[in-house]
Length: 160
Image 1 (cartoon, rainbow, N blue to C red):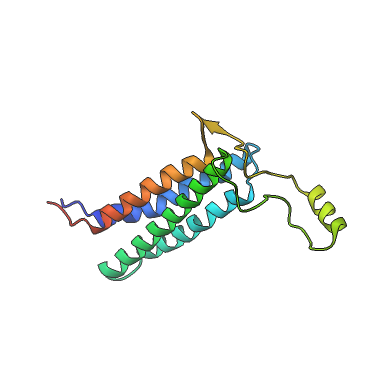
Image 2 (image 1 turned 180 degrees about the vertical axis):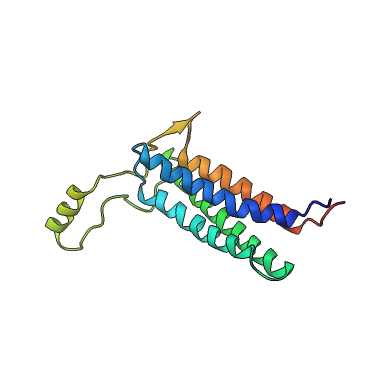
C-alpha cells in the first residue's frame, strides 16, 4: 500500500497543535497561569487546527496541500513566538511587553483595580521547566519540528 505523505502531514497538522493547546489547557488545571506571551503562542495553533480540519474536507489534492502547508506555517509561527518567549524567560533578550494587567491610560486607580483583580504573571519567568526547558521552549521545539515534518511530507510523492 502506498504511503501518502500528504495524508500523514494532514494528521500532524491537525493533531500536533491540538495536543499542544490541550497540554497548555491541562497545565492550567494544575495551577499554571498563562502569561500574555503564552496566549500569543496559542492563537496560531487555534488557526492551524481549523485550517488542518478544512484540509480533510477540501476537494482535490492541490487545495488540500495548500491548506496543510498553511497550517504548517501557522504552527511554525507559534514555534517562532515560542523561541522569542523562551529567550525572554532565559533573559537572552528583553520582551516587548511588560506582561502586566491591562492598563487604562491616564487612570491610575483603574490600573490598580485591574492589577488587584487578576494575578500578575510575568513573561520573563518560567513557571515550570523540565531539564531546563520551559513550556515556551517545548512549544518551540515541537512546533518547529512538526512544521518541518509537515512541509517535508506534504511535498513528498507517494512511495510504493
